[in-house]
Image 1 (cartoon, rainbow, N blue to C red):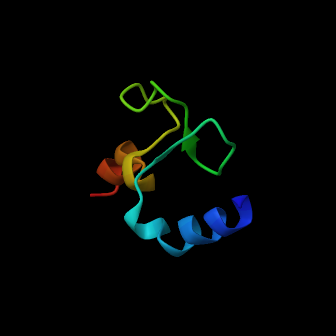
Image 2 (image 1 turned 30 degrees about the vertical axis):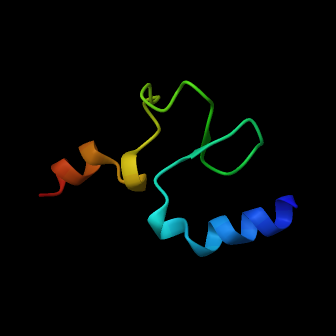
Length: 55
């Protein structure tokens, strides 16, 4: 059940770094792409460059 799975993911969103799936989810990563992030994918949803510019 996709809606139940989505609910569980949302409940634990702060503990999940990424979701690898062939099913569409917000922020999901395709199989084989977890170690090949795009420029707009941030670990723990933190823009590191922006963070570094503010310290």
